[in-house]
Length: 140
Image (cartoon, rainbow, N blue to C red; front, side, top):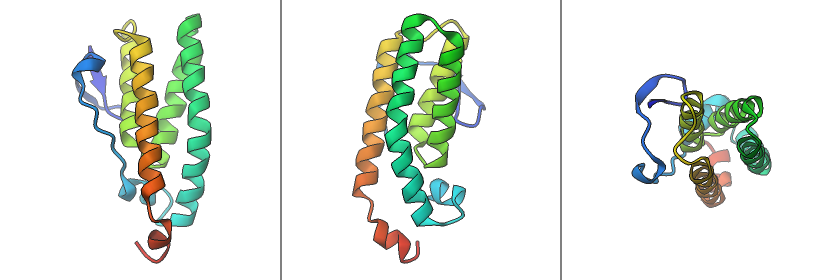
């Protein structure tokens, strides 16, 4: 199955979740670029994302359980876009992969892929909690 990166470019075949290495990725540079270098705005956006992302994941789970293709596609797109806006690129790329797999007939195991999204969200949360926002505010 084909796989796509967070910008929609074709990458490679879609691997089964257990074959994909777990590599949480956060791009501070990308996130700061989105907010034109404003760390205060980035911090606010990141906090909002961390509150809202679990809702998107639950909506995805409900969509898969109910077979609601419209809900699945919409929530995957929103998760991918919101992830990109705060530098959570691994989460966004995984949402993109899941979207591509869904369009091709579904991922090998929606439950395991959704669990992986939750793991990536927690890894992102952990990374964000370790950031020294005051250092960023003093001039990154």
